[in-house]
Image (cartoon, rainbow, N blue to C red; front, side):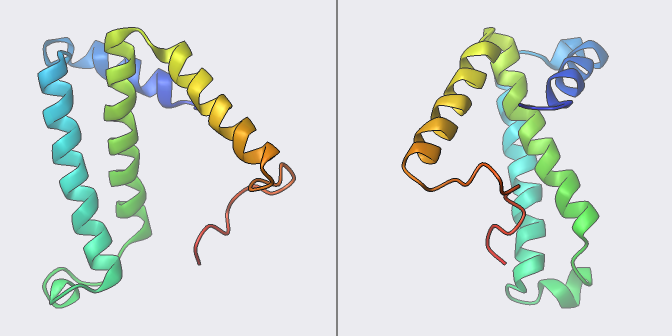
Length: 113
């Protein structure tokens, strides 16, 4: 269900083994959340963001979102709960599907806009 995210996360663990403790993972996650928030502000045109940083870029937004997901997934690797995380995701999916909130034939690309 997570595609290549587990492989990328494990690759980052191999690349930076010294930064793979809960504190470092969480500070990385918080840093990436801040960078994601900056991109969202740019997309939403909050304040003078566009004047200061230019037009929003979908590639940058996708990159920051991927970084947040990767850091969060690294926490599951650290605690060895990848299977439990996948089970939680599947349980949420099945519950929403059974309640009629998910159509399994749709890909979910039309989320908000």
